[in-house]
Length: 114
Length: 113
Image 1 (spheres, rainbow over the protein chains, first blue to last red):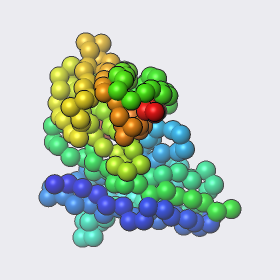
Image 2: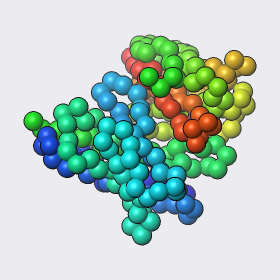
Image 3: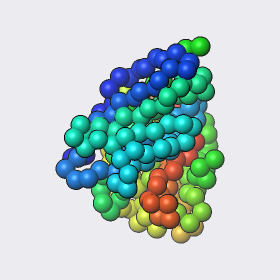
Image 4: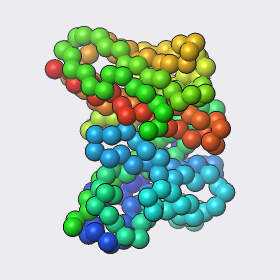
């Protein structure tokens, strides 16, 4: 069964510091992986997605993620954190070839300290 | 704005009652997904419809049901509500024209008291 694990339920960084949010996947087939962000009291917004075209994926708001098959990882990074990045981030894997449904990790809440 | 519309945004109801959550997918999207987000369970897939037919079922309780209508909007019906059903319910639709990307609505906050 395909699944994702997010390491760290809560990450705090200083404004301007590197953001690193970790996601490891488990899949018996080449996975399709996603990062979504949820700002307070809002819905889920797609940040970026990996669909096997390129291992380094650039998303919105300066975020990017690198697919590493050898490490079964898809960590999310941003070189310099902004206060506006404070939100909860979810890693997800697409399962079910026919339904395309997503299975989500438990989420990582990012706090940015001024 | 994802283009997925959910109503109501907030709902407070008593235990034992029944509620209906409504979702309009993005224009042209045939697939609708329902997810439940709660503090203890996280984001859980409930059910998916494609062009009016049920396509996949996840951790959906028997007290819950859904349907997708000919105009492609969907409704999630929650009955015999319990305190533990309090959660944020998301609807999402899948865009076949954008690599099957799934877009989420803003969610419907349900509080059962």
